[in-house]
Image (tube, rainbow, N blue to C red; front, side, top):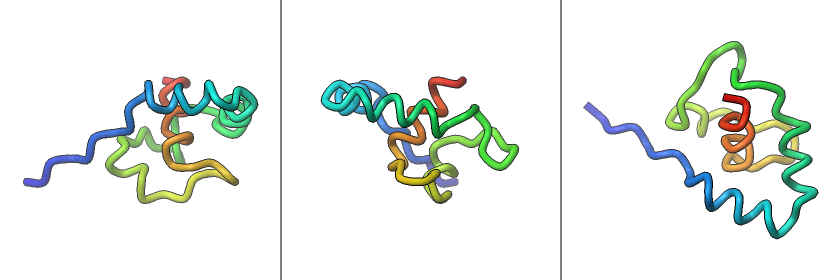
Length: 68
């Protein structure tokens, strides 16, 4: 049985947002809820999906976690 990949550290993402607060606003506008295509995905699955618009996978994960 394979061990799922660990999600990005939230504190690292917050540190990135601290350098550019407008980016955090962009993430909150683009991520509208905790579901992706009607599914509640773990990072191990989410990382294979295409993130919305110009978000990175890490930013997308952060936005989803904030909605959860």
